[in-house]
Amino acid sequence: MPAARKRPVTKSGKPRARKGVKLKPTDLTPGQLRLAEVPENLRELAAAVEADGGSVLAAYREPLGGNALLFCALPVDKVEPTAFQRDVSDAHVLKLTRAMDKTRRYLDPIIAVREEGGFRTPNGGHRLTALKELGAKSILALVVPEREVAYQILALNIEKAHNLREKALEVVRMYRDLAALGADRKESDYALEFEEPSLVTLGFAYEKKGRFSGGAYSAALKKVDKYFEKPLGDTVPERERRAQKLLELDEAVSAAVDKLKERGLTSPYLKAFVVARVNPLRFIKGEPPSFDDLLDTMTKRARGMDPARVKTDDLARSGGPPEE
Image (spheres, rainbow, N blue to C red):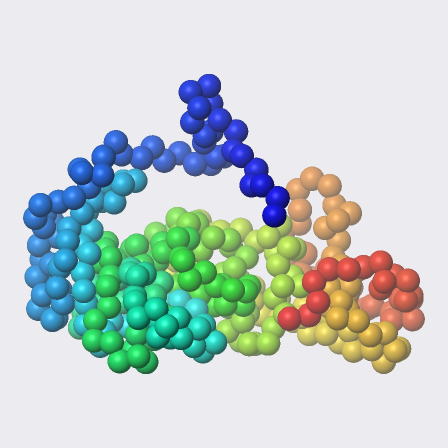
């Protein structure tokens, strides 16, 4: 196995800061992270934990920002996943339950936020499901007082979505949840939570068509899809409109693929080949076109694509991701 590449260091020997990272951690030492008692701003939350049958095991400060948290044991039946995280994978749960059965240990606390009637975890769906299947009565959790952390957890998620579809669906579920709450922050203010504006559009498209091949269009979308400088509640119709244009492009591309197959051309890269063929971005220098201009151009080219002009050698040289 090749050795990991070392990070560049400063003259003092410390790793150089990564581009775009501005965080300066607290100077809290390990002993200073421990809190002898629950601080005033967390006492109401601690009381809610106890009232729900849970137990506050410790209060502490996390080392980066010094934010106070509760380490708790919560009743399993009072914890549910947030609506916006990815769907639970049965294969993943099976792997977890077998590992827990073999080791007879649970060592990975979830994140939880307080909501009416119980708690929600934005990152522990699989662990929670596994514990419930095994019949456990309690689950260990880091209980965070700020509800907005539940949305930010996508950027920190240790149960990261495995593929583009799951990630995009996570984003759009979060998007709809925030919009329903009447969030008045601009869409661009949620860049951390959503990761990429293209994921929002792809998520709306996947809602409409579960078997949509979003990976074929992801690279192009990243060039032209931008966050809106409008309140989140006002942008849902525009995202739905963009998703519909993307699905119309996909229909045109799929029709072109079918024509190529009728000519006897077979390859797992046919869709990627057609998308690359109709995508003008590689020939454009400087500022890319708008979202609508790009998709209109690609859709028109896909509908007008002549399969007779495609040679087997063209397909062999194409490459790219196979269809999902």
